[in-house]
Image 1 (cartoon, one colour):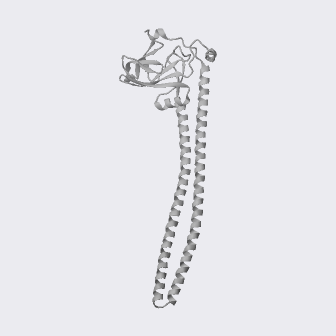
Image 2 (cartoon, rainbow, N blue to C red; image 1 turned 120 degrees about the horizontal axis):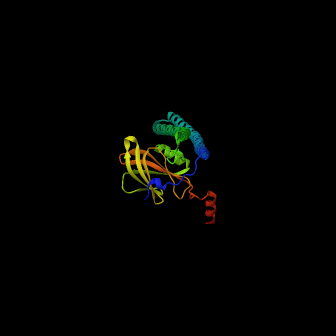
Image 3 (cartoon, rainbow, N blue to C red; image 1 turned 45 degrees about the vertical axis):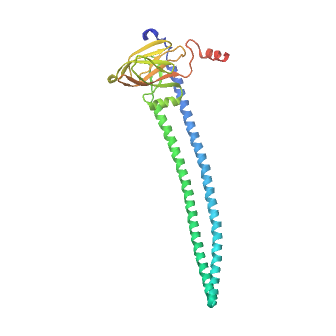
Amino acid sequence: MNDANNVHYIPPPSGPGLKIPILFGLVIALVAANVYMFLQIDQVRNEMATLQESLLDEISSLRETSSVSNETQQRRLETMRQELEAARRQAAMAAGRAKEEAMKRAEELARQLAEEQQRVREQQQRVAKDLSKVAQAAQTNVTRIGEVKTSVEQTRSELEKTIAALKQVTGDLGVQSGLIATNSKELAALKALGQRNYYEFDIRKSKRPVRVGDIALRLRDTSPKRNRFTLDIIADDKRITKRKRFVNEPLQFYVAAARQPYEVVVNRVEKDRIVGYLSTPKVKVPRGQSKETARNTSSQD
């Protein structure tokens, strides 16, 4: 294997023209994220509206059923009262044994009337309780709509803040890098943008390289106090050594399968250990071949 100084490809010229597509891509990604979130809010709102309508129909049905049931029970109670009054009048006019039987009949009717009144009260209480539960469920759903909307708005706001906090720097080959993530939250935001492929790694010092994406990495040395490290990058059967590099510094290198550089970013340095990610282009076009030629070759295949 050759040393890094002998295996670097000559990087393509960089200039301000590269920044415009990157910023344009960020705007498109942010707009797409906002559209997706608003669609989510609209879907949740429609579902809640349907549920709300169903609850209102249920309340109306309960009230109608309760009204009919109350009318029926009231008529039945009135009939029982009339029978009781008639039995009492009959008992008052009767004499001897007939009076005793009439009194027993009146007492039985009075007991039945009291039991029926108790059943009516209990049923009315159950209906009132059911109506209260349905109304409470409706209010809970209204509250939930507000909570979901607030949550989506907060998520969108945090994503915008995270994207705004991402840094754009120049890599160690002098090529303008894309956005750089310095922690897991920022890396998640980069993945959400979908502009490049990202492969996270957690590597310890070893004699054997560790596979990351379509390359391999071997940690040679670390200096936690200075946040520096030395790393071997193995790609295209060649080794590139990045000596005494710092955290959050884009380590750029070229592979035969892509015109844009690959980037290794180390976010944390510990004793004999580094944590970071590999960033690779979404579209890979062999160097020396134009994108138009690649499309034509692909269509012919």
